[in-house]
Image 1 (tube, helix red, strand yellow):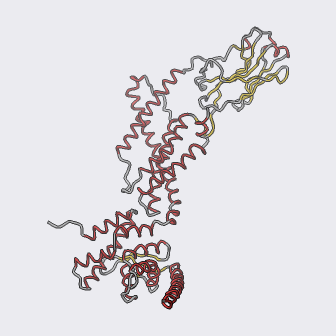
Image 2 (cartoon, rainbow over the protein chains, first blue to last red):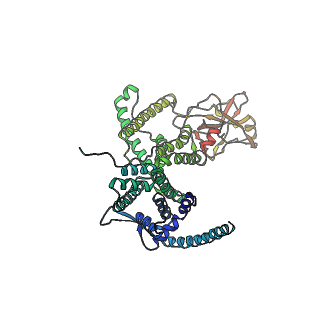
Length: 116
Length: 397
């Protein structure tokens, strides 16, 4: 079994990519973003809800997201996030980096298995 | 009686708010967003079958430690870019504060002047003071300090708001950095005609800036407390009356005691010399110029030759309305040159000294009887300002 910290550390670095990815489909508020990531991963993982908001606010400060307060028929008003043009560019770049990273890690991991 | 204890969620959000150390409006938005998140999470957990209490606890647990959450959000907001973009508005706030300080200072001092006149009217006979006009010349000092204090006070709130920080987290660094900048300008850059009072005000300007900056706080902006305003007014009034007393005493001590300015010596016209040895011309050329040129002319070569050791003398004196000499000897003498057999002149360059402002000058010479006579009198006192920076003034011996 892999060490537990490995999954947590990996996930921390990928939170911005996951957030940008789910927001590519349209605007969402914080809880929806966490739920959408959990759903898409088949419940395998979701960013810690405590690290989600720092990531959202950092992406907003970077100009990747725009936030708007909206009232809803049920519950309190919510802060909706949507991608900006800059955010779309960052998403494309992050996807490329992630693909490259996965290829590299896979190559190393595969080599390790063949030697073991 | 209703239970008014805060809920776990309220306590959690209060801890987040306290740890954020960000402006109120931003803090409110962040805690509102988290409250909405907790409500959604709780509803989802209840739908999933948890009890209400369990769902509340689980929702809070998923958000994690409130201080860690606040720290992460704060780092996301307090970026260097925001810090850089806060500089422009902060400079604008400084200028606005300085303008407000100027008018506020003028207002306080004018009110104090009115009160001082009333006070002098009431107790003037006891203090041997009479009101004969009001000298507002000394106002420039306090007004400068008001300007510096208000300029300092204006920055932290705007800078904190724009950089998403607490005023109390930025006011000390701003006070320190601002005071250094103000000190450099006040002590080294500004060049003015200086006296001790002006130098003292310039030296106190950075202190006033710091006081203004440190007085800024995160609490809602309040008008100047009545007690502070009243204290300023009383101080200014006392200063006004005291300034009147000092001026009256100074005037008394240095009252002009004659219908004409006291002589700098016996005139050459009263010397036991031949008629042609009495100067036929001369005096100050380029009156008021620096250096001053003093000269004397004679009709004959023999007339000029009757005088020895011709020199310019510089005497400390009061201003034109009080031209009494302040010393029993000149503070400076400059040997004259004999330009032609009938013409002698001397050029006086005043020393850059901090304690002399008004001078009287004369060209004198030793007569055949060995006494010194005034060949040409420079007339009314000449004001020689110390023009330079406060630092120059402070370091001039």
